[in-house]
Length: 392
Ligand SMILES: Nc1ncnc2c1ncn2[C@@H]1O[C@H](COP(=O)(O)OP(=O)(O)O)[C@@H](O)[C@H]1O
Ligand SMILES: [Mg+2]
Image 1: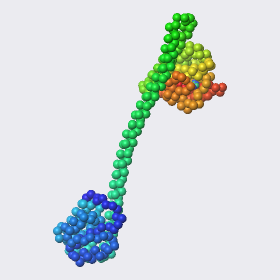
Image 2 (image 1 turned 90 degrees about the vertical axis):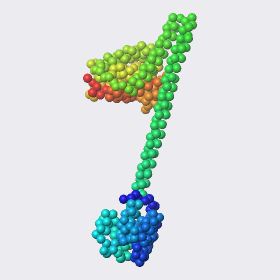
Image 3 (image 1 turned 90 degrees about the horizontal axis):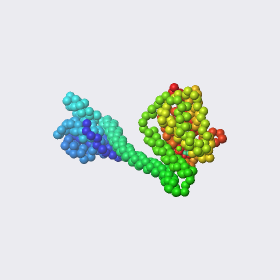
Image 4 (image 1 turned 120 degrees about the vertical axis):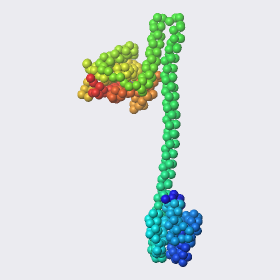
C-alpha cells in the first residue's frame, strides 16, 4: 500500500468523497452523510481522482460501476496514494464474482449493496473514519517518535563531543598543573644547592664549615633524587604489572630502615622495629620498599623536632598487618580525607604530593589495604593489611 499522507489530525470535520455515476443515488448518499463530514461528490473516476488529489479525503465511497476505471480500481489507487484513506465500495445486484474477489484482493474495508439504507451507510462511514483517524494519529505519533529519536541521537553525539573536549582540556590542565608542581618542587632544592656551592668558594671556610655545606648539598640532592623516584614510581605505578616474589618481610623492612637510618639519626628520630620472624609474603619487593620509604620520609618530615618511628609486622588470622607509626604532628585536618590523592600536599615547602598516592597504588596493586589512624598521644599511624593469600 502507498505512503501515508501527512495531514493534521482531524480536528475539524472529516473529508468525504462520494463517487457514483447515478446522479440520484449520489445525492441520496450525500444527503444521508450530512453532519458526518464535509462531503464532495463526483460522477466519474476521472473527476474523483482530481478531487482526491486536491482535497486528500479521509474516506472514499465509490460505486463499482463507474465510467472510466471501475470503483475498486479507483479505491486501489487512492490507497496507493494515501495508505490510511478509508475505502468503501458500493456494489449493485448483478456484480460478478470477479468483483467480490477484487474486494478481497484490494482489501477494501467495507462494501455496501445499493441502494443502501442511510443509517447503515452512516454507521459504515463512521466506523471507517474512526479507523482512519486512529491510523493517522498513530502514523503521526510514530513519525514524532522517529523525529525525537533522531534529535536524541544528535544530542547524544554533541554531548559526547563536548565531553571529550572537556576531558581533553582537563587532561591538559592536569598535565600543566603537574609540570608546574614538579618545577616548583625542584626549584627549592636547586636554589639551596646553588647558593651552598657559591659559599664553598669562600677561602676562609673551616674544615667543619666545609663539611656542613657538603652535607647540605648531599641532603638536597638526595631530596631531589627522592622526588625523581616518586615521580618515576607514579609513571611506573600507572603502568606495568607488579612482579611478586616470595619475600622475607622482616628482611625487607630492615633493609629499608637501614637506608633511612642516617637521615633519621640526623633529624633526631629514633627508629624502632618489631617484626614477626619467618614471615614470608608475596611482594613486589622494589615497589613495596619504595612505599615503606615514602611512609618513613613523611614521618621524618612530620617530626622536625625529632621523635620516634616504629615499624611493626604482625601475623594474625587473616594475614599480616604492617604498621608505620610516628610521634609527629599528625595528618593536617585540611587534607585528612584526601591525603592519598595525587598532588595533595600540605605544610611543606617542597612536597610533590605524590608520596602517599604511590603508597596506596602499590598497596592496592597487591590486593592489600591501607588506612590511617590517629594513635593516642598524637602522631600518625598507617596500617597496611596484607591478606592471607599473600602470606606464604
Ligand atoms: N606521617 C605523617 N604525618 C603527618 N602528616 C603526613 C604524614 N604523612 C603524610 N602527611 C601529610 O600528607 C601530605 C601528603 O603526603 P605525600 O602524598 O607523601 O606528599 P608530600 O609528602 O609530597 O607532601 C603531606 O604533605 C602531609 O601534609
Ligand atoms: Mg611525601
